[in-house]
Length: 430
Image (tube, rainbow, N blue to C red; front, side, top):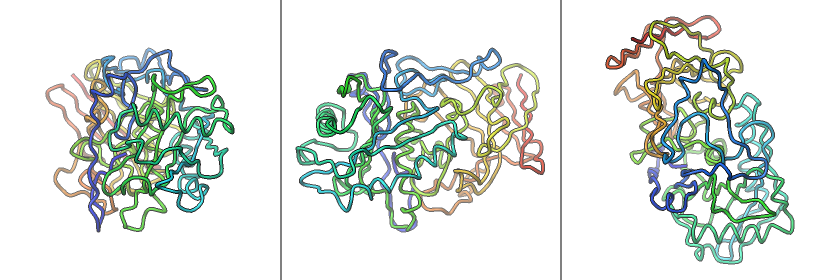
């Protein structure tokens, strides 16, 4: 993940987008905090299956797709090679340290910084469709044979040679205890004193769908997330929010791209954990929930035909009902419409309403594949929570407001809200 905004008392350094050339050369998925790259249909991990979205003839026009060379495309369905995102998913979790960075406190305390809150976050976001089960069969720090500095780990480091050596050393050290075939993904929780503070640079990274991964017990370690220093900005919120770097990183092993950009979180703000994972809790966009298989076909509206159509949206945080309407513009882009309220994982919502955003399946991870429409331009937003991109916090539309794309002849109007909080939306297109 990348820090996106400024806390009340300290500046967080914006993330850099990884150099994609090095990724493409090795044809595996990686970025400075995300998996990004080409996936091979033959690439699998233990228990991994291609993520498939609900596909009916009524929705086919809304299942946009990008070019095969796009890094972690927002297209639906997600390509094969990533870890599965529904049902039981087993996460092997190891806590590692080094001779020049010995583990601070107990390894189980480090494990406790992320669990059980990470699996609770996934349970809430997926409406119970993802049963995330972390396992730490090695209860102590797993000491690496080389000092941390010897691996050459730095921001944006490619898989070869440092990370390949590190993963090989982790496999060699853990293999007497661990059967890697029993797991769908790997979490490596590094002792926080290895490397710089997250306020200076965020080393946390995920390698997803990695066709160059070392083999352990006959399976490739193809989907692995690494978490380094604590995301503690001094605001006092770390104990409540610091774990959220792991759901972000694991989002990559499920095939989700980074939504932050080189300029920071200005494209999506705090509306998706793949954009901002510092600060107050936030959920995933409805589009991502569809990609992950957490929404079925009855919960998706596809406004592909000319004329006017009406939909009743239920809050994204609640199970059941229509969650997402998509208005395709062409085979690779379109507008997504969903209802966000302050409940579930969305504790930072300060202006409930209908969120509209553009999805482009032909844009690489970290380069702005999603852009939120701001219904309240240049207001400074309504959120005052630390590390929340405030300008977009009041982006949703409320009853009586409309979004218009005059060039494409598209109008989206929020007509009314009922006593249960559901919102009625009219979509008109030429």
